[in-house]
Amino acid sequence: MPEASLIPIVAYNYGARNKSRISASVEWGVIYGIALFIAFFMLLELLPVQMLGLFDASKHMMEIGIPAIRILAVAYLISIPSLVFAAALQGLSQGTRSMYITMLRQAIFPLAFSFLLSRTGQLQVVWTAFILAELLGIPVAWFLWRKSFNESVSAEPEFSNV
Figure 1 (cartoon, rainbow, N blue to C red):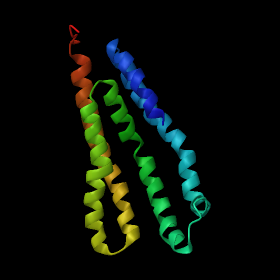
Figure 2: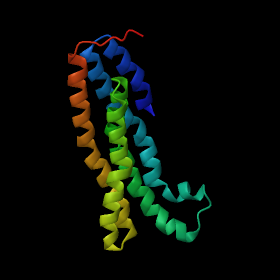
Figure 3: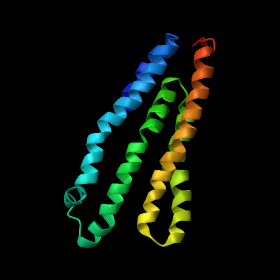
Figure 4: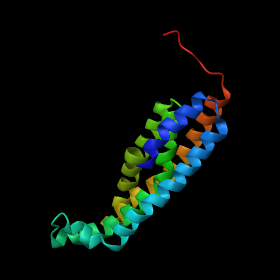
């Protein structure tokens, strides 16, 4: 994913104290991430039968899998900003905050929403838990990114004696 290549770019510019370059890199990371994912998104949305056919899916699996793939494709597309912010946080040496974003959007939010939506008794509704999790993850990721960016880049560099 393109966000992995963002880590060294942010880290280098963090060391150089180049605040504008860090901001631009993150913005372009989101743009490129979405642009690159659109092709994959279109494959999932337009060819779910063929995608499941790669796994020799049964008729029952097709009934479950086709709506799931289409719903999850939307969640994957929505996840791009959170992925980019998490990678950028790693570039600022803020791995813990990056981990918080990942845990929220991939475990805590989906489990909570899945539990609540399972009360409807409709599997297709439960799949939307992933979309809701990603939508809720974006503002959390953005907040953690802005907070870390403002703290890290405006602070004086700390050097160890190691």
